[in-house]
Amino acid sequence: MSEDATNFDRRSMLKTLTAGAVCTLAASGMANSAPQISVAEFPAVPKGLSPESLAEDESFWAKVALFYDTAQGIVNLEHGYWGKMSRPVQEAYVDNTRMVNTDLSYYARKHYKNDERVSTLNVAKALGAREDEVVLTRNATESIHNLIRQYNRLEPDDAILYTDIDYPSFKDTMRWLAASGNLEAVEVTLPPQANQQQILDKYIEAFDKHPNLKLMLLTHVSNQHGLILPVAKVSAIAKLRGIDVICDCAQSWGLLDFNITELNVDWAGFNLHKWIGSPVGVGALYMKKGSLKKVSPYPGESDPKNISVNSRVHTATVNFASILTLPAAINFHNMLGGANKEARLRYLHALWATEARKMPHIEVLGGADGESCTGMGAFRLAGKTTLEEAKNLQQRLENEFGVFTVVRVGLSSGCCIRVTPQVFTSANDISQLLIALKNLG
Image (cartoon, rainbow, N blue to C red; front, side, top):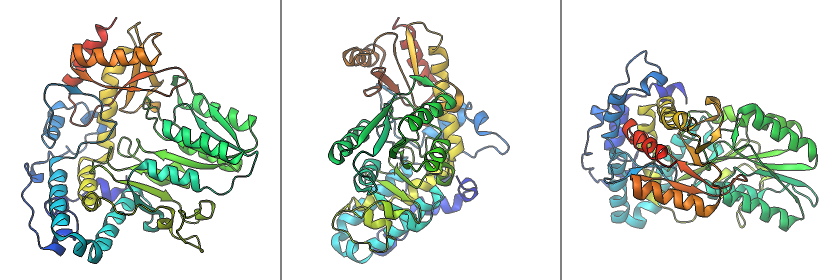
């Protein structure tokens, strides 16, 4: 993240969160109710303490957890679906919803565009992008699907590439693209446990075997098991060979602390309702300035000069309140600190994965080293790879041990159980998972 985000001003944070979204409530004249817990009570990050050291400070993270409503009766380790709003962000969202529901079209037609631009500016700044390189969408799926469907540089017999660790819907869309355009579909299988060099080697091998490649889908963090891919290195090699890259950042932004320029990609899709902590229904599409010619406008939209990223989507009516709450969500994320979040989530993953790797009846999937792991991870019982076996395992974890997880389907090596903590997850929660893993043998 940028230095501005890291050194976020607490007074600015308080002003944004207690006012809902920038400009919005002032336009309507509504007053916000006070949040359930004051942002002024947010724990200060000790000066000079590294994110890695802070990650192990349970007292600090227990204070962070106070800013989130907690479900009772289950240890929820399935936070990869979407992210929980902090209480201050939730309060802003409720106020924004109330305002929109009160003012309706009068607000939407007179003030929303200005407020939407404020939210877009916040997203672009947080990503390290220009304002004219970002358009808000409903989710990363909308962003990525539009890029795949509207890419206009393919001819019959060209090849397109994806891997088994990619999001299933995107793999299906790539297969559809190949079938509809008389293209060669190339699916690369990555090792169930892999490091950065092994992943890079697999891509280079595929590039060598298929010189007709023109387009590839490249995932930053796999939704299957949290594996980090060396996006910048793969993209650099792909560009040298004339291969365009669509980057799936649906799970990575906020799970990892990074700037879009570090990825060396022209196009990427993001979710803000996963790890940034916005309300559900907000994503973003990034298109680097000067790269729009290769992606046609959304059908029916016009952009003869290829300068408008907004013309690449058409979301129609959206959840206005979700968009208006983006500044509050990004500010809360910045207040905690992207590097601190990443380190905490990696630490929680290591707590269970390190021990699980020592268990002969457990197969841990994803990154084979620290550089390749995120806070998200996955496992299965050794030799148990079918969907039925994975479903049975998920049910055992939930019913016998009170740990909620999710089955993932799509890896060439078979099905698995994904484990995804959040910043309010405690080490004790992870201990409950470890107890379960030890007793599954």
